[in-house]
Length: 364
Image (tube, rainbow, N blue to C red; front, side, top):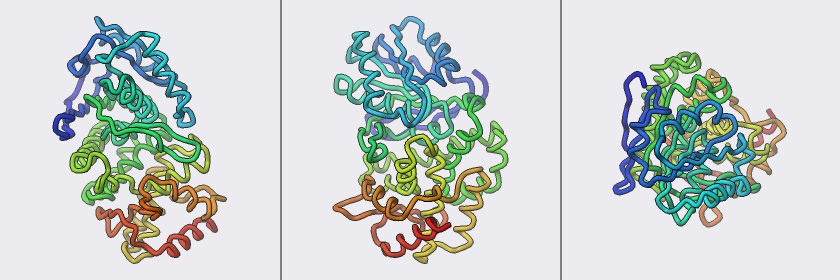
């Protein structure tokens, strides 16, 4: 292990847990073993991550009864059928209620392993070891777990908190440029929600992030996790404020569902969704044109799309957005912007303005 290790805390009372951020944490037993209760451990990973990081994790668990399951890699495999393979391995190994499930991989692995831990024998411990930027700054923190359905993304799942999150920034060295950019989309989101100073920092340091500058990445991860931990601590189960974390996601999830899971990476769809939310906010008179332009320019500089896929019609958007988890009593709610760092959850918008914005994107 090398470098400083930052420790943040997600303050959820008896469900509180630490987030460790540093280089060389994968395979370091000090941060892993103290969060394991029993003797049985299942490591859930995928076929891409396993050759890179499974061996050091297993070696750090010497003395435990360790099993591993390698899932196929990709969002299209985030299904009930693939998810059930985790239970098959747990049952074949006769793992009991004191076992621990470790999620070693990106957001798909973390979501499925966490959901399996929530369900197996009505709940066993689990630990997140995220290996992508997107999972380190977003999906591993906050306890949202689940799988996709052909009609909607993440519509089947549970809130279930990990024992800890171990974010090894060294793992980002093996991440390809497209995946890195996808993670930056979620980082930008935090600046837009309620951290305008961070948004300005991102404008000033985007080139450093794309160049994988270690200090810049560590700072962005720590700041993003701190922003998310603060929101989750105030609203664990998304009764109100936590919905702000879905800025760009209602549009983005519609894109992912329409194109087929995995064609667009989650972060790519969120990036386009952030631009769409900004454009709608601008049309409503809530956002200044210069602010909307800054958002688009930053997302472009990150190497991310600023528009939805060509040929996606407004009717299809509205159909899929109607399945969004923020819909209440048939009313579509969106996360929009009243300024940089001033996100709001609202249903108080003119549907005709939304339709006009969707028409504009459909024609472009």
